[in-house]
Length: 433
Ligand code: GLC
Image (cartoon, rainbow, N blue to C red; front, side, top):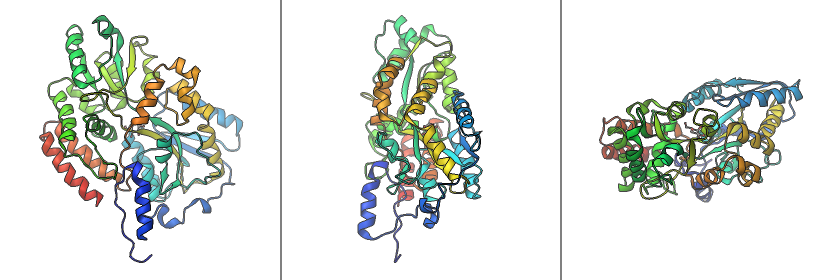
């Protein structure tokens, strides 16, 4: 352990291998995953069975409760108690971190956001999953990458997420518009045609509240303007001309009302209900919205398209969730069996059918029955395929806060977008040193 050099605290998902190679060559030590290694898979007792808990964000579809009832019927001595957390990504993280910091095993299995997984692994809060007990064959590569930290699997990829553009097909049809927009300008032009007849309807919204969803949305804006939020070798690049076009776009649309002013308080659910309530024509959101919208009064009236961008199709931020097993829980044997059962191809298929969650099992995207039921599945697959990961960083919570602070100041007109992003570049550079 002579003279360990700290690793850079921010790494684009795809470049982790390169970084690892550098670390290995230079003999430097990685930021100790599993705090000192005392909590690795080798110390876990995978034979211990008994009751456990499972914590995840709000069960918007109501499907998870049914799945757990099914498990409990088949496993009367290994019952799972469902702990339903908030619908806000930030609150979910806070609830999980609080338990982990107290070394509490109260949440045995956690649905950890893809973007928190590295941080949880680095802190030693998740058990490393043994490769022979959790094979990853046939899974989306990006989802497996998002559950892997320093070449070791710390969680089981459960759902992926790629952003989609939901739009009111009925209103576009009525205005004689055949195609959804491919660019932001086209979207605006469509709105200019359609909105005059629609009282109380604004053009577009995504998630513009100050929380993790804003990080996803602003990274998409920058990447869709031809910029690169984080370069392939893990460096921030938010002060480039292209990146500033992205933040200019979002701030400008809020200023002129193309995005309704109140959208600065919207997360996923608020923006979904605004769309379903006829208050916006176009919505950027995740796949889960499809299942809710087909059950709303919009059934048969909306469709799904790829995200538009500045001068061509846009680029989604990669989302998703992984099932992690708490280092501090009892009954890890049951936890691992439950995780595997919940995320089997059959259960992922069912979750797609009942909750329109994006699977991590790649073959499901070309399943004939599913493609018939969800005609947008190839669009989603494409969105996920080209989606850009957020930085995989031990200090991700500082990184994302910096992004949210600067972006929100620009959206609220408190800072000029260029100034906000110049400052952000400096902050991110210092966090990546
Ligand atoms: C979705 C994504 C997740 C992201 C969150 C932001 O749940 O799957 O990765 O962080 O939205 O609100």
